[in-house]
Length: 321
View: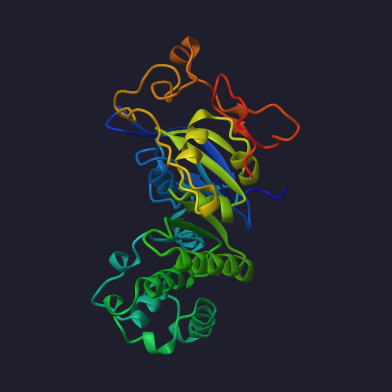
């Protein structure tokens, strides 16, 4: 296997000396692949995104890009890194200045990095063709285009600097199912065409299941399961992962069923329960779960290669079609 493009190693982010937004998390993203990061609100997904982009310094641990510690880079190379890692925002309209035209918004990253516009407009036009942005849109403002078009502009703006890593934060949120499919197909095509590596942050497990190579599941700042997407969705090892999958709506008229919910309320991150953090909501919890915090370890089984779970009693869920 090739070396990771980006990784975090035993990273902890501590706020106010009390709140552990991220606690001893490690994972890697390999070139050309897509890692899905999932979990409820407050699980730490946004904090991890900021870490990967170098926008947040960890309290402990390291953030690596191409094997180099992002926060140990000299000032000049930090600028290089910022061109290598870009973000697609969840709400493209609010992330784009309403006072600027689409043309100016696409040119802005080049201006910020001191790159000559004339030399880079050929790539800009290649991006516009690949993404489906017509010339007629260039002199419009963000509020004058549709939500789908605004997302395409956001994608183009993220790719203008020719990054290798793209963090996509809920890229399909608020879109109709058909438009979601078009956008995901576009991101897949762009990945192959420009050699992109994605970190996809999403609540939509149907999207994650469809487009990712690996999935990482977070709960209250901890990584509770990680592995190949096909394996994790077919045989989730952690009770929280199984609960998330069960709570995800199935778009299939032949398989309609009441949407499941995860029992109980997520604990406050400032008053974490002892032992396993999921034990207050877990239907399988045993006394050991309330006393010992489980480590993330490989799941046994020849068909579970690459799958890890932080659970004292990982057991198989039924095979999912």
